[in-house]
Length: 72
Image 1 (tube, rainbow, N blue to C red):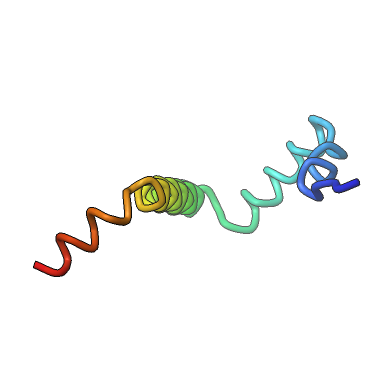
Image 2: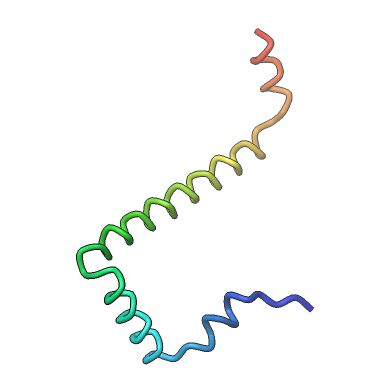
C-alpha cells in the first residue's frame, strides 16, 4: 500500500488556510517580488516539460538509425 505525501499534505488545507498562507507569502516577499517569483517558477516548469519531452523523444528514437549515422 503506497501513498503519496503530496495529496495528503495538500488535502488537509481548507480555503481559509490557503488565504493565510498567501498573505504570509505576500508579507515575506512583498508585492513586487511575487511576479518575479512566479515568472521564474513558470520558466522552471516549462524547462522541466521540455526536458521530459526530449527524454521521451530520445527513448522512442530507434537505436539502429543512430549508430549508422554516427559512424559516417
